[in-house]
Length: 282
Image (cartoon, rainbow, N blue to C red; front, side, top):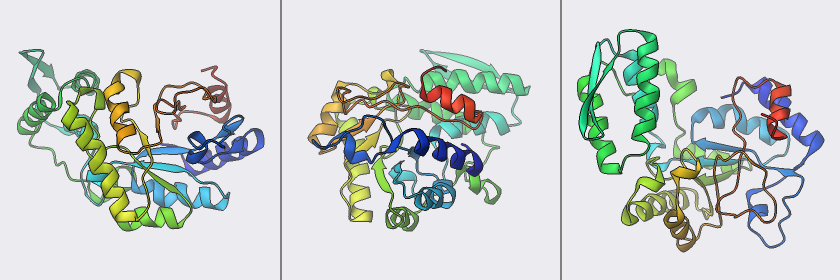
């Protein structure tokens, strides 16, 4: 995440050097994306509603907010955050998980060991089929049951998701709501039926709750290995018009509109680094 001051400075830079786009510019025949920018957000956190939306509205900009529909209105964490927090907060000295067909032990006695375990486990879980992922997540939760997986009142600024009323408020504030799947799986790991279900459930929930068509999606995690041609075929069949990755390249009129590129922005980026990232230098 970035601070509101950072976000506003970044918007001012973008408006000085580029022209604002809307998501529809990436798929309508008359759309022209050259020299433009679109601001997007993934997951559906409430801090998007509380902080980002008012700033975008003040500058007359439309952002695109891709939401994970099964988490809207809950106090649950994303499954990737669950892994991190279970390992970070547990007092257990180790965890043993069935990975690659054999039990593997991860020591958890120091902060460094916990960080190493988190990075290793999350990387491997992102490549597992959904059934195996559920099994390993169950092992984690059972062994590290001293950690609560409900967002606490003191964590709402960081982890709490919007509710549907807030999602509708985003639309009233001039913003666009897009899909980010129903449960945030890595789409490339899913079966044909699972892939279609994740996309359809998300699309239907957004359209039912907002009364607006859902035509755009961003892929969870968004790297090239996290989605495939089967997922793209499902997007087309279900009526999605474009989809965004997290591959950090420019888009041009020849870019596949179901594999659009984005530059990920982080808290650590000073304005000069932000400018360099947009130019592809870093």
